[in-house]
Amino acid sequence: MKLCPTGHATHPQWRMAAALVLAQLRAQMALPAYAQAPTLGLLYITDHYAGQAQPLLDHLAAELPEVTDWSGTVGVGVCANNAEYFDEPALVVMLLELPCDQYRVFSGVAPLPRASTGGFVAHTALVHADGDTPDVASLIAEMAERTTSGYVFGGLSASRGASVQFAVGGNGNLAGQGAAGGVFGGGLSGVAFGAGVALLSRVTQGCQPVGPTHRITAAKDNVVLELDGEPALDVLLQTLDVSLDGDPQQAVQSVRATLAGLMDEQAAPTPGRTGHFGTDTRVRHIIGLDGTRHGVALADMVEPGMGLAFCQRNVAAARADLMRICAEVREELEPAEFEPLSLPAGAGQELSPGYGATQAPQPPRPERHIAGALYVSCSGRGGPHFGGPGAELQIVRHALGDVPLAGFFAGGEIAHHHLYGYTGVLTVFCTE
Image (cartoon, rainbow, N blue to C red; front, side, top):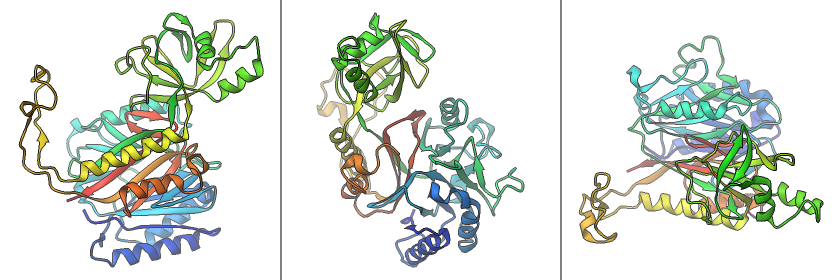
């Protein structure tokens, strides 16, 4: 897989922005290291262009006839390497050169088939979704089940106007798409990738716990009633060190600045643990306080047995965690003389970690390079949250280098089989 041509621009008129993007793409496609015959295009626009989504897609498809497949969506911002376009008219395009049997564009009218049906087998998938779609979290989980890895990545459309998605496949039409022009609203769309497409993906959290992890011991729908056997509202106020009786105004302000990190029962750590969130934690808003039942209402359904930790957005923690995942990606790409020996579950547990008995020489892992990167960040993270315009993407560039990158600022982030909030999802396409 060669380097992915990438173009980005801002202009009040979409045709001018598209012309600037096309000029960048064509200049890169003329270079030997870049893909010269790409077939898949990823297109992200800010909501300023949402009303012109169809003519914009038609124009790009006509100017790049070799690109037969398109996918993308709208965000309140879009990003490229070292650049953020937030709350201004802008677009970014990335082109990928992939074997035709290693990816499929899907949408609501041409859904991704299950692996058991034969034909193309999806290993993972880039997913774009409309947040207003009923039960969207369950649809994302169901989409993950259609892949052999169980891993999907992407984000929710974010727009003050139309929440459009792009999905065009194979000579301008998806099978079953009919007369649809490739611009959709609602549901899910995206690109499924086969096992032959090498990629790495990481999730970075933007919130930090302000207290220990609790076990939900009583709940009703989206209301947490008890934490570790104590009234949930009392636990929240105690964690924040505020009182509704003493200074209710201060208490309300503290609660408004607080979020809840939820963990599934099987992933919940031991109650009382503190520290940074892992990828199993989904941050949700506190949407109300139930004074009668001393409960805390969240923007998600909860069940007894789940873990919960109250948290707040933390700039320093967000920066550190973003640098961490970028470092992990770079380490994965570097060649290694030795790799851990894969052992069956439970085997070798009597051996101390670090001893040679737990590892064995493996063939050297070849050095891999980043052909292109996709970054989906929460719309609440971009810009000033990291210290200034473009600061978040500057961190990514400093860690990964000058690599092709495209992405958008979403209304919710998708990774694994979960819907996240206040996170960033970094995915890189690799080449040896």
